[in-house]
Length: 175
Image 1 (tube, rainbow, N blue to C red):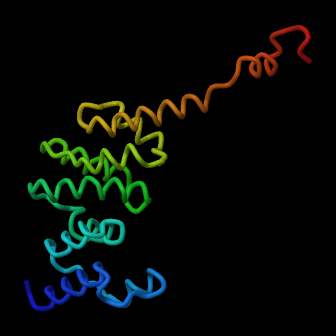
Image 2: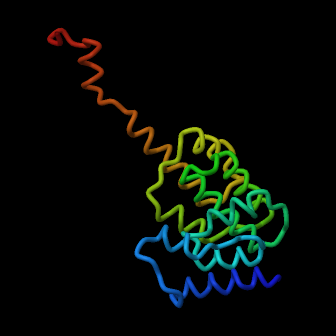
Image 3: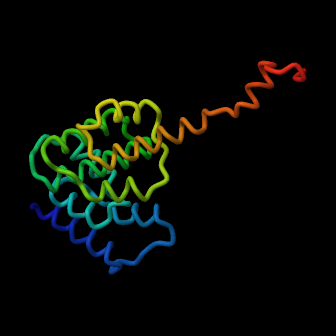
């Protein structure tokens, strides 16, 4: 690591541990810290420590096009791709490709399971259809989430028979 990278790492770790004076609002604190994510490993460690604050930016800068085989990076990539898709900063097709790629290499992030089971996210129809059309290439939890989204959508689309009968005048007394 260069001196600049070590300095950036030291500042980040100090800030994350509360050693550096914190600002009143979060945006101001991030601007003050002036974090520079220039090294993959250093940035990865920072994103592991504070995934909600730095995971997205580290993923988009370093791991979006990652083609290596390190399981720890592939797990991080799976989780962050899904989080970015949910947040709308990554297209769902790219996120699904990332999850599929890691799963095909035998990597499955347990954090992905946790996130899928404990979030109230809405999966778009084309996404759950894609997952359910070929479930063996996706982690089971993603398939379960897609199935639940499909079931919710089907339940919402059901109309009561009485409503249909009235609108189509099935009975003589309907006017």
